[in-house]
Length: 358
Image (cartoon, rainbow, N blue to C red; front, side, top):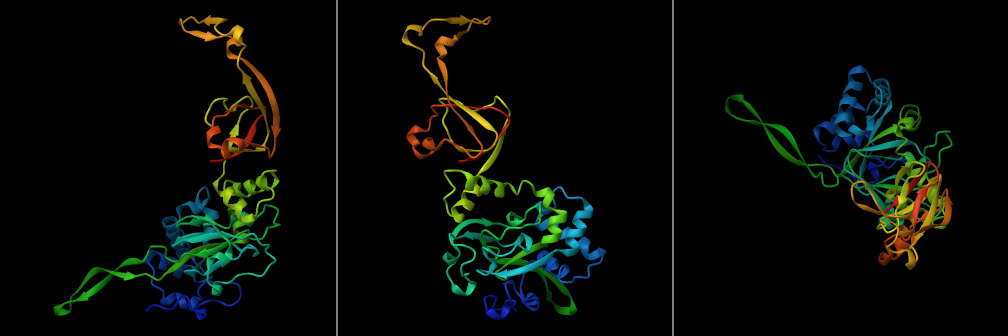
């Protein structure tokens, strides 16, 4: 039997838009997901139930437990929850207080962010169009997690900076199930049959306190997005951008480290990225061609018989600027495709960490 998963009656009261516990019995899911829903439905979990939860999570979302010790995994399995969200239902709203760390077990969710302040009136799933939630940022597929950006090490968590909406089963429309067919002489033969699965997204939630004690320290890489957003807000180029634009850029940015003296950009090379200095300093210089009087002179032969250009032939390096934290490099080249070749050389003045945007 299927239920009308989009109906108001199937939602919980308050701000929780997941399906009510009594609805989950009428929803058709694949066998392993249904086992996980059943195993997490009770707060009294014995050793066998915890082992089953761990086994199922390892299959459905193996990245969730990366780098965690067995004791940490057991503690998470003891308190995690599984919730089901109908297609187009709200998971949480931009401006909400953070309650948990989420992992997609089945289906998908989409992230949206809007310009308006979180204190303004909220959109709800009943209002229809997703455009009410802002601009589409990205989609989170099965096995991936979200919701960590609001958590801070000191416990002073920030409000959600984007809204998350369920995409339902997201193409996982049919499932195979075993059934039995009846034959003569009271024999039964098992066979495979296909059923239409319910259009719901299944999420595993690690409560805030459990996430902070068991997982936060291991997820430093995930918190780079928060660092990126902070750097963007402090940069002269991005500080006046709207929150939805900041989030979208932050998701696309990568981080790279350079040792002191390392060449970050070579003059004459094609410049593929826009760079933002997160920490450290760089020296920007331009190599001036040698005067005509020196061209063709001062050719030095190496022991291998090949020749190298002397200092006069190579030209003179002229220092242009010294740049530091939150400064941007490569803006002109990124705006003008014809100017993609760098006219400058950029070298790390000290150990430097940088974000780059393709």
